[in-house]
Length: 287
Image (cartoon, rainbow, N blue to C red; front, side, top):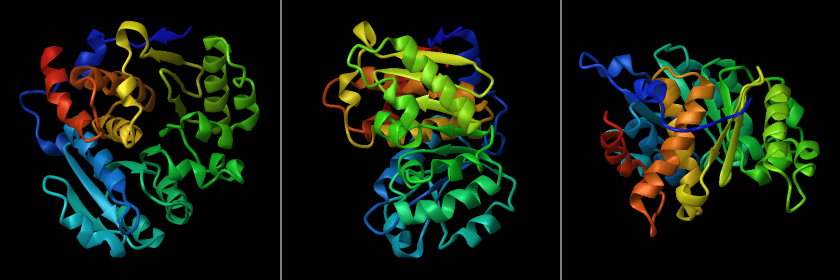
């Protein structure tokens, strides 16, 4: 049975922090960055991860963009990450418990870094370039995925990875139940949680659990159709997994917060505004 995502006591409890909390108790998220001039998407994801409550957030950047990133960051930390060998070394530190790959990463860097990240068996979000880099051979990606991964495709990316499932959704008046079913089949095939983005976002995990987040009607947020909004969602989910939420719960909570932040800001929204609205959302739900 598919449940409609809404604020619940369990969600509020997952978001709350103890009065005895310290930064090391809320995880350390690592966001991989792309090359020179491509670092903005990683910064959006990192800002979202930090705002949603990850204790520490680091951007891991290639040498070519290291100083560009350094000039833009304050509370977010920075590490040099020239190659996949370096990523495997970085992941020897078990305190680094959540990863985000894709936003602004670049296809070539994604093909190198994604296998190394999945080797580390951390809670991992794969978005954007980390998905499209494998469009010619999606099975090569699927064989490396594990249950602590969340894939966050929009419909175009979903089609590249799951063309047969996407074909069933191509008719203009396709019932929502078909999208839920396709997402569930994708999660089972990939062996991880899948969040299929849209005004009606569907989420499924390999066990068969499904959820729907509908941003329509009174909850519509059409201004989310802006560059970088998806990078923020990827960062929210990563930050929530760094805090200890399961992939499925992090995906559901991240989708709800994403829309709430957009609705709190309103028309004129750009992606940079989304993380900055989270404190207001948290106050409104009593955190």
